Length: 179
Image (cartoon, rainbow, N blue to C red):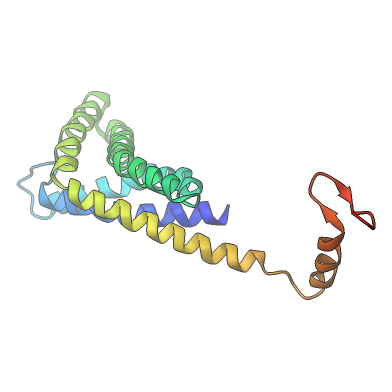
């Protein structure tokens, strides 16, 4: 559970930053009001965080497996992060704008986010690939540190563990003398 939480935080941090970069490169909404495009971009980035965190939490265990499993998790988060970010941002914007201005305006804003999100995901795809690599490396490093800390037996358990380790074999029961 703790490792999945770390994977979610790392994914939200890395890919949320990339969403913010994409919204600065090409603001999703053009406005004549100064500063409103930056505010709209920040809101889009904020709305995208839940989807990114869920994706990171879901793929964390695969990233902690073998190297081929980690590579496939990196590929999955690289492909899935733009989808999760755009979907989450569309849902948040549709609900937020729909409640404030009506469902038709909310639908227009969600459509604009879809078009802009797909275009910008293609534009920053090299950064997404680097973010995927960084995510896999950070998750594997934090998972390895968590496993090392969890596997070390405490002092009272160590003698019992050594005693039982010599007497039992998995699947066969206790050893008998002479075997």
